[in-house]
Length: 64
Image (cartoon, rainbow, N blue to C red; front, side, top):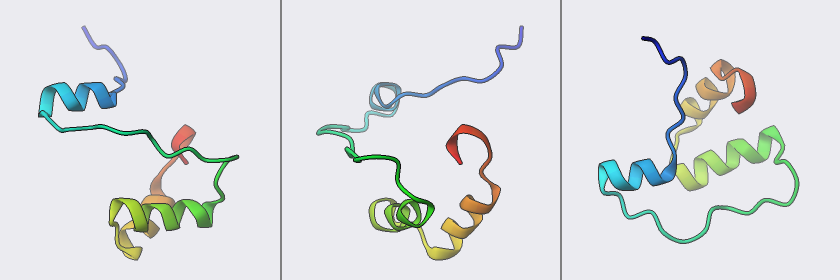
């Protein structure tokens, strides 16, 4: 029976992949702009400008 979409939480990642996820998440004041989001992806995730450009171009919906 198909279940549709599934949400993977940080707790799931911690339990299933044994990743040591600790500390607090980033706390933003207000909603970041597109430019701020791009800068965050480069700074915190280590994405390249090309990867970020692709993600920004192809991401749709609530995560855009």
